[in-house]
Length: 114
Image (cartoon, rainbow, N blue to C red; front, side, top):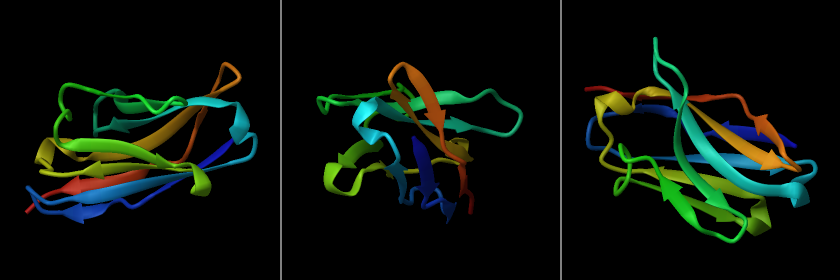
């Protein structure tokens, strides 16, 4: 499974961004996908997840502001981020679990600053 994340950039506090994660390869084996982030000097943390049945779950820090969704026809998972805060600044990664194996894409940098 290969994952390609995109959509990061610089945004002002209160603004919005949408990240995309395109999956390719053995995608039929994917049972869940998620977004993670790693801020400077901090450990990587889980942000949001979506399972094959479509259920979604969010970290408390982003609940109500971020929305994870998927487009099965495009094999793509999205993370819509609204009401962004400076503390959301991080490199965002998408991950997938397929056949019990975790896969990671390269990150995309999100900077929230005025």
